[in-house]
Length: 121
Image 1 (cartoon, rainbow, N blue to C red):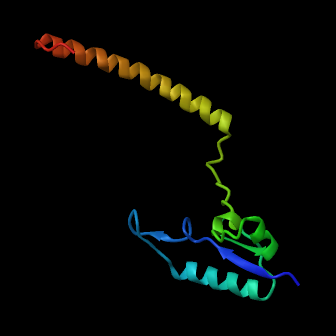
Image 2 (tube, rainbow, N blue to C red):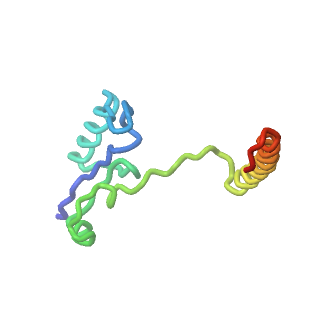
């Protein structure tokens, strides 16, 4: 029989952010953790990337007995915004180019106005 250890990572994404440093677990978070523990105890745990996973002693040994949950749980897939990367980069690059043009116009205008009152920039 292989010994399994359960790992959960609730650091990000599941807790309500109170401030930059403080996050609060909601009743929903606690229920999800309790359900995960129950599934693990019943031998029915379904790994959820970024949240929970079970690892054998051999897997843990393969990681140098490092017990950081992220090594076993992984990182949840980002749902993204649905816009394909290439299209998004094309759109954002064009927008940035336009902003650069506007920036140069404003820079020239500021220099002109400061020059008119005797300040050289």
